[in-house]
Length: 401
Image (cartoon, rainbow, N blue to C red; front, side, top):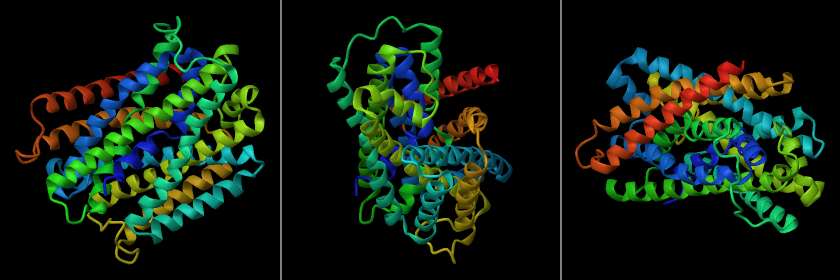
């Protein structure tokens, strides 16, 4: 009962875009990004803990609460933008899946098509418990990122935590720092976890005990996702970061190739490919559900995964359409770099609105469940920090266009 929504959403947080960012961080700044990755654990936990608390106490999704507190137009605006960003994120996840397929010689249409059909079946035919079990099982493949880091260091003989070096404070380091911090919380993560704790149900548990279980789940997930990010950082830091730090690592094949001199191409493809497959698939599942939940909540549709498609047809239709459209875009479009940049900008712009809503709604909870004192200060500080860095990151991306 403890593990579920928190661990799953955190595994999804380490998605294709985050993995590429971590790989670039290791290549360009070597081990200097390890400490920031550790410091992001409490920030990630504090924000998601507020979302799970809203879900367990109110038994309503974020879209429902926003609609009642701020009106339907505001809720529709937030849900509409979230749907666009979730769609773009889903495209990037399918692009990651296509990249993994290319490592073993699979055509893009085959790898994307097989995974797309499987996800469509899980979302439309399974109940929440089945979706959660599937997501956690596939997301567990991300452990191979950590295995790759250990294997690289065994081969090259570099200590696991050597000094950071002189990259701290450089423009490259600061840019990558903003990218890592700005991506630590995505708007769709908040929507997903708040509704997922409702669908999970925590049967037989009081509100207090359900909160304890969900908080443990989220804390474990926050640690796990950042350990995975650190694994990617140290793997590329010990290889391309030591020999060719200016080498671009913008694709799955390029990152696997960077590990090949230490591991051999076969092992590099296997370890990195399995890790990326787990990251991309679990993120695709979470993003699909988050976008569909947001629209269904705002429009007042039935939206529980425990409802059959005939009872929650609108919700399942939105989820299915998102998967199909994203898969078709990846199969039909060659270069998705521009789209990925646009999605990152939109995420950064909508995140402050979502966090403001969470902070405001959390403050309206009954006294036993509303945060006070240090917890309230931590939540607001985390929201402000993530918002500022997300907006700075959006500015950097816009300046580069």
